[in-house]
Length: 158
Image (cartoon, rainbow, N blue to C red; front, top):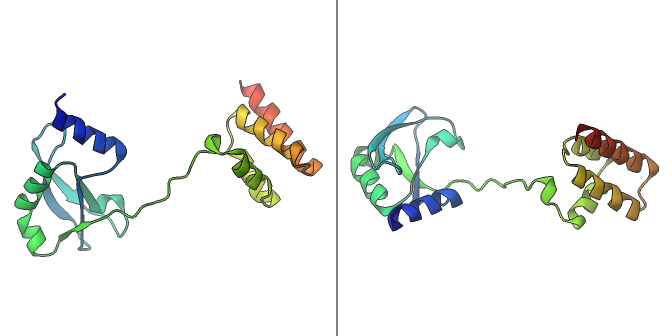
């Protein structure tokens, strides 16, 4: 793999494109771009509503950007596509990566919200950490017993 491809693949893995463009019209917009893997031109139809992933197109290198701007000059001139930045949607951290402080915050949630969250836990280790923390924090017997039941349920699955 040459250095140019390595940079492109690195940007793709990190999710940091060289440039991003989005459509501005309500309908579909056809654009041409270079395939970052093969280097061949490909047609892309941008569609979708505001904030939808299908209304964006990413280019991953300067060469792809130059190609994109030249081949889609008409769409740029007529205002059908514009440079854009993707809205940064917060990426939820999996509960397995929570610190003890974050787990203590979960234990302080209202009971039904906590119970819903507890139902989403699939790891014995996380459930056991919650159990230990709940005992350390001297939580009510109701909370401790619910966590104990979750721990035993997960241990039976293993």
